[in-house]
Image 1: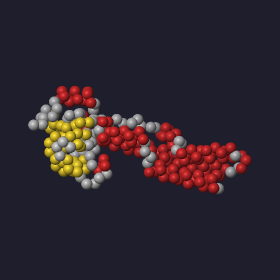
Image 2 (image 1 turned 30 degrees about the horizontal axis):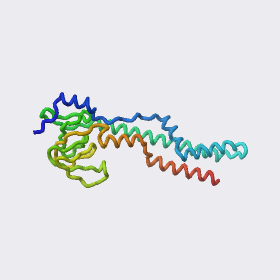
Image 3 (image 1 turned 60 degrees about the horizontal axis):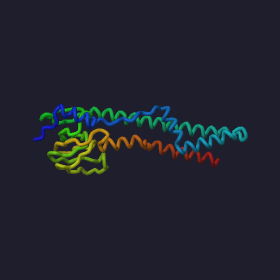
Image 4 (image 1 turned 180 degrees about the horizontal axis):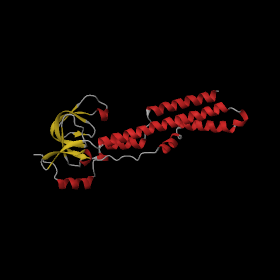
Length: 224
């Protein structure tokens, strides 16, 4: 019979393996994001063009083209900064909401609800239809259909049986099972993926379009 951890064992496991909280990257301020946007390759080209135009400004008196480059730089940088800041705020809010989720664990033979961050390694988690899996683990009892689209993009649910692995962030589509937690927090597949995405700082679709727009504007400037 599966009884789960005792309260004493929960404390010991948390000390040994840590909590189930996902580490949040330090949010960048608007000023830093603006400065980083100036390091964009296209913005660098525009800045070089601006420098050249400024050097010959008093010779050619081409104020309009010089002003156009300045405006292009400011618009691209400001919109990119606002977009990146908005993305960081949205991600921060998503993490805050995720940390408030509750899940069912069996401890001392009793099923109880705890917050997702309180889950520890070797916890026995009861997973039922509609539940979001709170950590990585192995099924100890039961069979479930799992929606893993958030992890691999596949739309078809997969059946998981005793001994098979389940991953944090995926969702129970049907049936129920008990899962023993094997990894928590940053050590889960979701945690590692989240850390990688935060470190890479992948460009948003808007930022990519702004690069294309800035490139188009710079080409017009060179042709003219």
